[in-house]
Length: 316
Image (cartoon, rainbow, N blue to C red; front, side, top):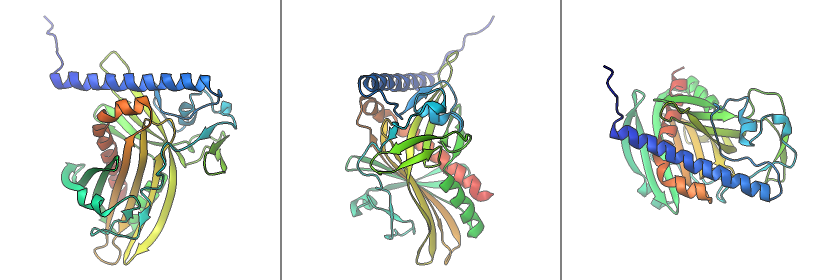
């Protein structure tokens, strides 16, 4: 006689959380579509929920809700969804660990960042977090190797941005709209006064898989972000570092910015360290406000997966 298998309480809670996230994103998408149709009927780049796995080939039309890239028109525009773009811009005010500070940091921020260690991917990651002026600030640091070759490998990877990781049954990562297709379309970045021809690497998509109970298929939440700066081989005393960051675009369910930095302690220990800093808050939308209380764990998993990817790159 076949015995019945019941899910544990933790599994039920996890599945209910996933279904709730799906409901929020789906409702947000529906509201956005209705608002779009009521306005000037131009295509909008925003968070999408889909059963299709995002790839370099399909992510650009996916962000615009299209089947094919050719139909993106010259009226399509993208813009950032907050007014503090560049908040992670590195400054020469290095902290005691020789990482560049952030433009948005204050003395209070540095004191408030609570540090704790976690074991992950065979290394001990230094994690810090605080809340300040409406921002959730997360910081992750890890020593990944030694020497110039290690530094260059990590530098190339962080400037490229792309990665994909598997966390249990979920996958997550970052894709570039520039890779995988030669088709182009004219898209304007609002506020810059300049248009650009895409696909290009500065327009990125972050994605997270939502695993649902069988027989339901997994869903993918795909979010639009855009690179805001690159700093290559900047010197501070005997240290060499490179940084880059992306900010969230209008239509994203969160608002904020992520910076990735690699530091080579060239003149001292020869160590190579990586750091991820994230400033985030709820986007000014109904979906953003509803999803914000539940997104903390997923954010942490995403950044730790990115750290793991860079750690693997550093090892060669």
